Structure formats: C-alpha cells, structure tokens
Length: 451
Image 1: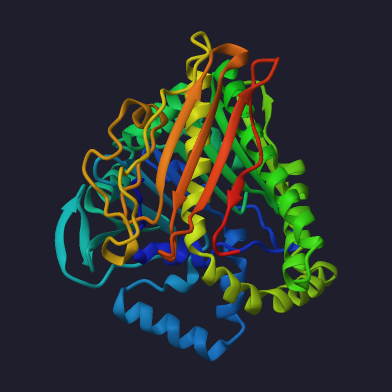
Image 2: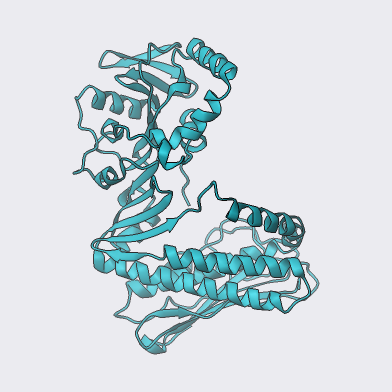
C-alpha cells in the first residue's frame, strides 16, 4: 500500500494542534479553503477552534509564550505561536506525492533564510527540504511546486477551491474543527480501481463542533449500495467473532482475558451500531458521537479497566503475535473474495482456486519465515483476490472456491508450524451466498498450536 507523509514543518500543526474545545470556545472564523488550489486532490483543514488546546498550552505560561514567540520571530521571521488556522493540500499524490500548507498568521512579516527563487515577485525561502513564502493572511510552506500553486491562488492568477471543485463538498464542513477530503481518482492504481468499482468520487472526513465524526463517500448511489453491503458483511462477521471470543473468555479462568473480551465486544458493537454507513442521496454516510472529553463518568472506569488489562494482556499478546499475520490475511482474502463477487454478480462466481502458497512450509527457512518470492502469488486466483504477501511471513495460504450463484462458496485458509515442533496452526474463513444473493462469512475457525 502506498503511504503519503506531510512535511514535518506543518505535520506538527495539523496533528499535534488539532484538538477539540468546548462549544463555548468555538469562535466562527473565515474558511481557509479558498486558499487551496482548485485542482487539489487531497485537502486537510483545521479551524481556529481546532487549535484551541494547543494555543491554551502555549498561552497559559506567559514566560514560555514570550520566549518561544521571540525565538520563532528571530529564527523564521514569523511567530508561529499565533497560528489561528491551517489548511494543507496536494495536487499530486501519484506517482510522487507533493504537499503544501497555508498557516493563517495575522500580520506575518518577511521570512528569514536563504532565498531560492520567487513566484509572482514573492520570495521563496528555503526551510529544510521545503520552501516557504509569505502571502496575504499567512505563510505557505511545503514542496516548491505546491507553494507556487498557493501563491498563484493568493494573487488571483489561478482559481481557488470552490463549491464547484472536485472537493467542493468540504465547504459544508468549513466551520468544523477538522475536515479532510480526498478525490478517489488521486490514489495508487489499486485504490483507484476499487473506487471506480464502488462508484466513489470523493471521500471526506469531518470532526464537527459538536465532537461528532462524519465520514462520507460521494458517488454513484447504486454502486455505493454495493459498498455498503460489503462493509456491513465484513463488520457483522467481525462483531460475531468478537462475541464468540467473549463467550469463550467468559467460560475460562483468566479474569483479565474475560474483562478484555467483554469490554472489547460491547464497545465494538456499540460503535458499529452508531457508525454503520447509510445511503443518503448520492453519499454513503457514517456518523459517530465522540464522548465528552470532560466526562469523568467515562474516563475513570475506562482508565481502571485499561490499567488492569494492559500489562498482563501485553505479555500474552507478545506470545501470540505470530497469529495476527494469519488472521488478518485470511480476512483480507475473504474481503477480496466479496469484492470480486460483487463485481461479477452476473457470473455468480468467486475467484478461482489456488494451491498452497508458497509451496514449501516456512519452518526451517531463515528465521523460520518464508521469504517473499517474486511471482509466488501470481496465480489467477491470487490476482483476482488482489492478495499477496510481500514481507517475510510464517504461514502458507490457500483459497478454494466452488459452485455458482446461491450454491457458490469459498474457503480462505492459512497454516503454519510456528515453533517448528511438527504441530501446525490453521485458520480459515468460509464464505457462502444467501438466498438474497449477499455474501455471508462464517466466524473465523482456528486450531492454534500456541493455545
């Protein structure tokens, strides 16, 4: 999976400073979205209210506030402790990502540093690997091409983001503490293919002033309904597996495991009940109300449970960490099978079967792991699933399928001898088709040699 990283200079602003505040502390401020180039494919914006906690931490110590402000003014020419909003964007995520951010700093002066060029008579100053420039209302910082695009917008030589832009739906969240948007066509090829399959044009994430998380995927309603069914199938199976784990733990003698399993199941079930997506017009919408951060009714018991469970559970999970590879990969295979079936409903088939891959067991190889081999997962079935293991791994994998339509079914499996004693661990998920034509997953079955 391709990963993208924001430059450190404004990652700190976007991630560390982005904290909610109480409703009484939420002054409405102007939207920074018009500062973003119209052709942006990814946008993250943090309002003034979203920076309230960071500003409070700085302002409550007058001596620190004064010294930090003076230092930044000397070193950079701009006192960044006065940032009252930020927006970051990218106009290019693939094949090479580039980013920039606009930091709203009232009365920003000239930057200090080495001038490496200019754009529209605005000096470009080098800061580490990036460049920065002062424009009306604040400072631009990031990759040079993106900063130059931001200058063009600030000087009205290029259009800024508007309600007619690809990510124009973000204007509906302009007063939120935090909002982010991504054009589905901007990712790596596999992500783009999946987005096209489910008719997704844009994805937005919002943290509202009422501490509610809102995730929306906009696109083709009919295809989005297929995505909703897929998500519901996978999550329902996951909740069922957590319930089985809870029931097993409740019958055992390990009190800490029982507490962890009970809390985990009920918290997951509560979250899913509220967050499960609903189709609203041409959008798939999920909402979740975050707990009140000031509520001790929730905080105190949760801290107690975490303290009681964390240390013993950590020791136990270290011993069982090797099984995580198998369970996550088997579920990934099952998810790939569902995606394939949804895309080929007329044929009514799952991907073709595979043999055990790799062909030889991993035990006895370097580190008792199978080394990733070029072409190991090149069979038609693996390609149809979109599945491969590209890092050293403990398990062999197999996918088998039979039947068509309501008689179609599959088995996704993993097996491995984790301590090379001749006893193997095995994991499998079985998928079938209901009378209504939807794919259903049976709970994960396992035989774990470490139990």
